[in-house]
Length: 150
Image (tube, rainbow, N blue to C red; front, side, top):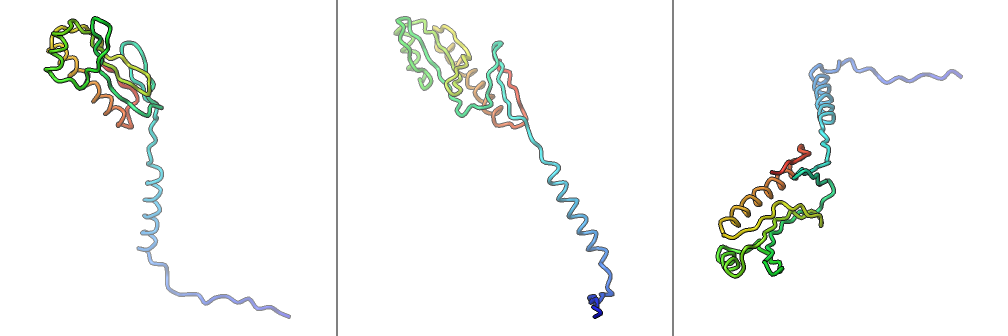
């Protein structure tokens, strides 16, 4: 027995040159997409007053403003308006005000100062709010790895 080899009929048409170029271009384009993926290091630190705070695994960032009265009582001053602060200062002065950035229970004491006037509290709060905005934008920026607070 002599087996015959069956070959399919050859199509005399050539492969179109534009089709080959289009296929090559698409392959190059896909290679560029996969190779240009950027990976950023996620280790983030905050430097403040000579201390480094690791922010890599922090889930929640919060802020607090506390006032310690001369009798030892501690009051939350974050949401106090001008009249409330002025009456508290008339009641008992000076007040030691502390601003904190709380990172999963780890406190960063941003500023601690004894105040006797509302203007001192106002400037302290304003400076603290600006620092809070810097921390928020730092955490949102994937490229930055270290923030130096002033």
